[in-house]
Image (cartoon, rainbow, N blue to C red; front, side, top):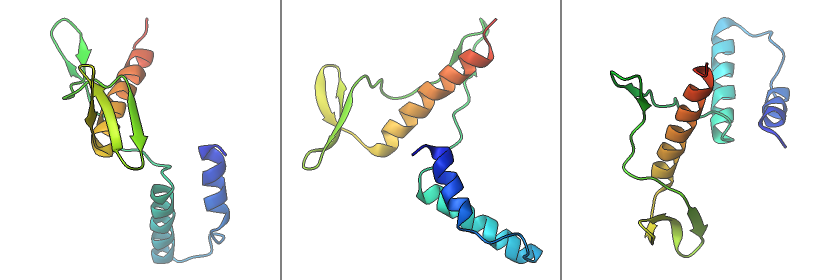
Length: 110
């Protein structure tokens, strides 16, 4: 199921717009909470730092080229050739950095 299908499924469960403004606002917040719970909204992507030569860069404390999860060992990444415990929050940060760089490149291609 795609994210669009999942959004459509969530929206199908909400009543038609016959609500007061306050009820409508409350309903919108319920929809947003449902989207967040299903992982359908993502955080804002980090902004690049652009130097005087025009290089746009995003910094992170690590570069992850491989990651994995094991029920007993948890989340791990390889850093300098060795396996290290990691956190979902840190991997999401790194993923957002890569996504922001890719989006920036696509928007700015000549």
